[in-house]
Image 1 (cartoon, rainbow, N blue to C red):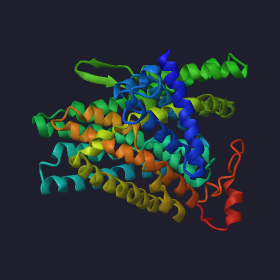
Image 2: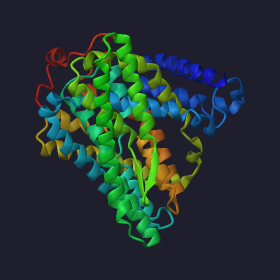
Image 3: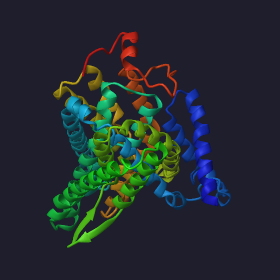
Image 4: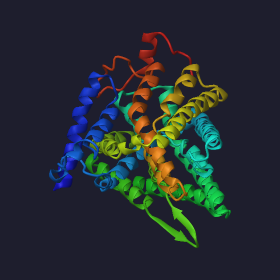
Length: 437
């Protein structure tokens, strides 16, 4: 009973806060996060009303609803997979792959260099193992916030299409970088080299995730053909995304090798294969999007409630966190800028893409949870928590501004929620940003 009350208050609170955000011209994502922060254990939750279902009395009570967040992430990845249509890949697939890889690697190198310099200046601030682990975590970009901003403002155009592809690729690249860096970090602490941890396990995870997602996507297409009712097709689609999420959360050992799946990669691959083999996938994806709208609101409200404000009282975390945020932001911007220049993207895309890659949340927090195995892993976790607090609150607004600057969101934001954005008319109306990608 209390769970249902908490969920309803999260939805109502998030949606009401979005009305205030609209007056301030802020993205709805920011409103949902602030609503969660207010309902969390450091604000309304501290008043002791959680026994009535009002707010969350502890971070553990928020974590008890984690399955909702995992489900939302699965549907977000499934939706992003819809962007990997063959016609899209033929137009900018090579560019997206190059940019996705290079911006992540450059970000990792820049953050590594900054944090290692901090270590050599004062070794008590951060260890070498934690520094290189944080560098890899810095490569991760949150797809959820980006997708929600794109949806809310009906953003469309060359940069938006490229952005969604790059964000999807970023997950796989980040996984490899983190696995390798974390493996090296453990070697530095234990002195034992494990090629299985550094190389084999991440490769197995990526390959198995792609295979599983492809199989589920193919099975979804084959079973959808038995149904002609829109409601039944929608129900089958939702069931298969649930199946993808459930299987991807499994983890087991085979001969001492950890075998697991990436939830984002599995669901993304499921959406990719389905949208490329099914001729009615676009209409169906639109229906799935409308069904998942409340789930996405819940995801961001719960994400806001999970933000730990206690870390703001730790000067050590603040110092390392500020260095991490500054150099991660520089890495994302210049990584995207240089890789866009290399692939001959337009000036508009070069100048704005990096800003849209700043949001960071669930994937980074998952990596930080694993990094707690290090001797000072709590430092890694707290720094990532601090960065998520900052990036999630300002990242969506920066993404919005970058898309406006690119001419892919109408600045006045007077489009109907039912009418897709038309960047072509808008670009010629404004009279700028006419360079082609």
